[in-house]
Length: 335
Image 1: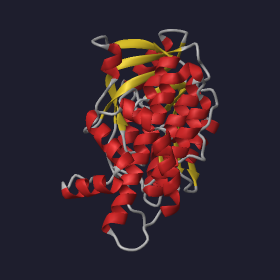
Image 2: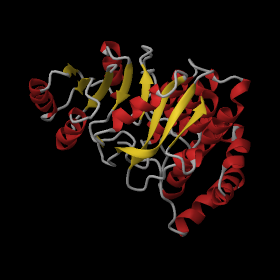
Image 3: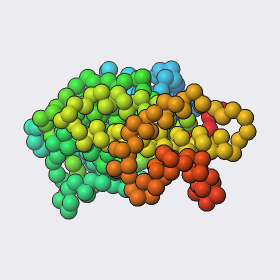
Image 4: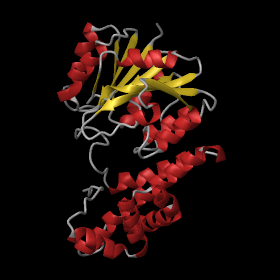
């Protein structure tokens, strides 16, 4: 059996960490290198890691200053010795055969460069069945996989339900939102003629909690704004042979811009004085208008109405949302 390096970034996760680690060390696929990267936790996370290290020789603990999840994952990637790379977040847990299934999937064909498994989560809509139908597993090409991970309603670009070849690729630490999607696209672009194995079953348990970077409806205006930069970076990787993926990213940029504009116009409408983030609004507006056509093309009919309202009568749209009490702000106000 070839070694799988499992990278677990940890930050203030003492309430969930033991359950997470128990699910990893009990994997039926036993040839694991378990890399616990303590990202400057201020709780008992580090002592929990050391206790598990003392009872399982497969575990390595790296204690670092708090520098964010991308840096923590990169610390693991830089020292990983496995042929394959997997990720687990310290809030989550996995079925005891998840890595066995992912390994069997990626090894089932020499042309496979990645395997993917489904996710258990409250409110999570799984789209793997749309790819595989009633079959327990299926294979898609890398170009199709890039199309799927960039879709809003597709394969998704998260790291933790996938198994990668260890190509010594690192995350780009310049991006703090959607950095996992940027990594997955960049990884897949290394293998344009290869394929991805899809397991039409669920094996990863994602816990919606405050400790997850993406658990809230929003990240704060500033972090959400950086999504747009990440999307522009991804677009720069894609040539004309990835037109579907480019359309997906442009449409998502339009929708993120819409969310930012709704939030900002609501502040202008409700609050007195100069609203925050005003310097960002010309950039957001430009991106919204630049990609409006793509966003409108892929939107649901309800989204189409809102996009048209934002384009032509933004204040009227926001007032209507407020009056209907349907204004669910997707961006959190930052202190």
